[in-house]
Amino acid sequence: MNEADLEFEVERLALQQLLDGQLDAASRNRKGQFATPTGLAVDIQRYAKKCLGERGKVRFIDPALGTGSFYSALLNVFPRTSISAAVGYEIDPHYGNPAKKLWGKTGLDVYLEDFTQAEVPLPDERFNLLICNPPYVRHHHMTGDEKQRLKARTWDACEVDISGLAGLYCYFLVLGHLWMADNGLAAWLIPSEFMDVNYGASVKRYLLDKVTLLHIHRFDPNDVQFGDALVSSAVVWFRNTPPQRTGRVRFTFGGTLERPKRERLVSADTLRHEPKWTRYPMKEAHQAATGPVLGDFFRIKRGLVTGSNKYFILSEREIENRGLPIAAFRPILPSPRNVPIDEISCDSFGNPLLEQRLFLLDPPWTEKEIRDEYPSLWSYLEEGKAEGIADRYVCRHRAMWYAQERRPPAPFVCTYLGRSDKKNGRPFRFILNDSKATAANVYLMLYPKAPFESALSDSPELKRQVWECLNQICPQVMLNEGRVYGGGLHKLEPKELGNVSAKALVGLFPELRRRCSWKQGELFQ
Image 1 (cartoon, rainbow, N blue to C red):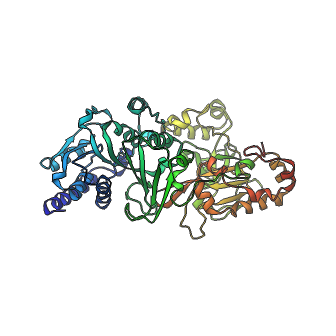
Image 2 (cartoon, rainbow, N blue to C red):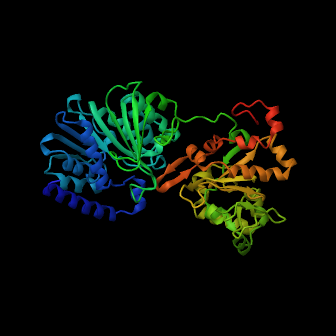
Image 3 (tube, rainbow, N blue to C red):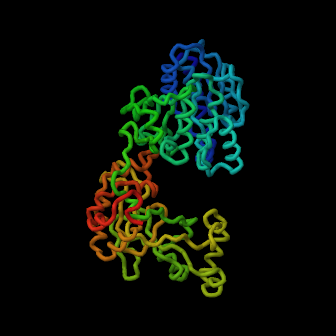
């Protein structure tokens, strides 16, 4: 980087810090505004230069410019004489206006408008280098009308049907297709979650069917790229050329783009049948369980969503101080961090014997019955209405806004989130629940299927043996089925836990194994 360009980058970093400081973190989170670190931007541009080679002039576009970290890196890596055009779009004037002023005399054309609504250029005006860190706006921060507009536009662009659960970055990636010159190169710095989640299927189909997918580099989730975003990031590289079915995709992990810690080539055909791309490069192609899985033995449900834990979950003391009827409550497990043991016993009423004893408000009565018979509870419900609890999404979609969804106590619960760097090496915990406590959605609840349920009720000792088998499941097997976020945070959804091998459990039920010819999903109904 020459001295002038270095001064620009120093000024840009100071500007970025100033502008970020003028907005609260919650606002930037809603808008998905997470600035790209200088070192990472330069690393990506160096890799882009290597991919492009010496083929002609560079026509560069960044659809979500921010303060211009990728353009600054472009000036660092490419000679000025090789850059024939540079364009950036930025919807937020808070960042766009200062960026336009900063880069105004350097050859960058800054457009202060929404890239997803911008007019597509003519073919001879398109770009051979598109690099972008698109806004990570989650779907629940987007309006229904906005989603419909984006879905229609991505379908018109290249017949890709984006899920309504997808984040804004998915639409950006697909819409960028129309801005790329033939054989143009694209690099998208996006959350790696698209590689595993259901809504990412349409993005993966685009990458396999519409372009030539070259390389996906996934950063180590323990090394969060953006200090204020709990996401695990990936750089997705592809060319705007028809895909080759016999082609192979380079998957790398950790380190840098050019010097990753791990690497593997995976055929495009394999990727078409692989639901979780984050298995690579660490693993070979995923082999589905060849025997029974946990989903054969259990109905697995997320714990219940209350609508407001602070309002609906109370301690014994809070219930007593308010004079609320205990019959309106049922016990509920505290957060996993407040459950230091993996075996929960109970008192004579079925309440968990834990230091923190919590109860879930779930009265079985109508509002009229409550008003007539339980004045203290009626007053509490009125408080909830005044605070807007009754109008929240979950509550207003219930028959009675204060009545919880059905989640009876489960004999086994599993933590929903965990970290792989725990001292015991187990990111997820299976807890033996002998109480009558239900659980919130920070747990997965395992309900035995019949006749498995009957076998457990006939032999209490068997319940403990099952619990011990669950805790003997290899942690890596569970991690392979789940998904990972920034900071090494892993998550398991019910279906993912249900896909974990349960061979150890079969050994506890030889008579059932003989009686039932196993077929996935049909061992126990």
